[in-house]
Length: 160
Image (cartoon, rainbow, N blue to C red; front, side, top):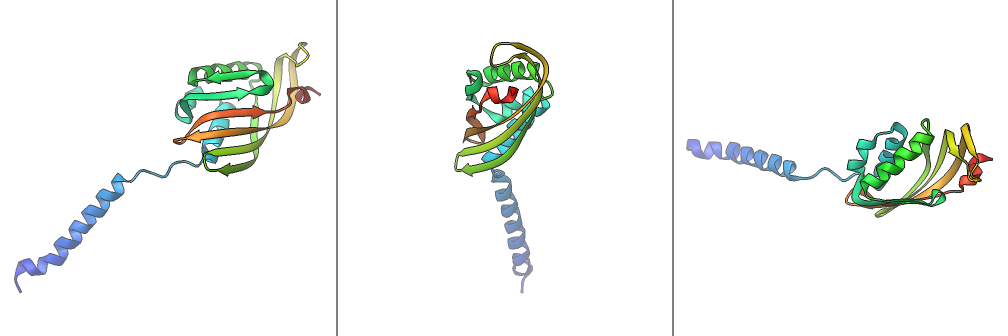
């Protein structure tokens, strides 16, 4: 048997290894689940991580906070909304308590607590008032980023 015939299994095996490695490099990592994206968003709020919004939100994302009458569109507007909320509640603690994910939608329940300074729902200014409450959000995920985020809660109940 010639040397070239004996080397054939080695060459074929080497070629297969190189091709398999090349295919592995071409594969994209699995996209984060919608739940993981929502968790990253909540974490960014808790840590006051404004830079994280650039990787979590779609460029034309919308965050609606119905209780505060906020309709922020685009990363810059959402960042401004986040800054305003954090200014009045610097120690906010937003916790996810239950999550349901179905395709591109995530629904979750949450609890929020903070020390608040600013106007209460009746318009009276309060200083360093401990508030807490619960709410829910519906989130639409597109290409691994938040496209639309809508909060539902009763702001008045936080001040009772």
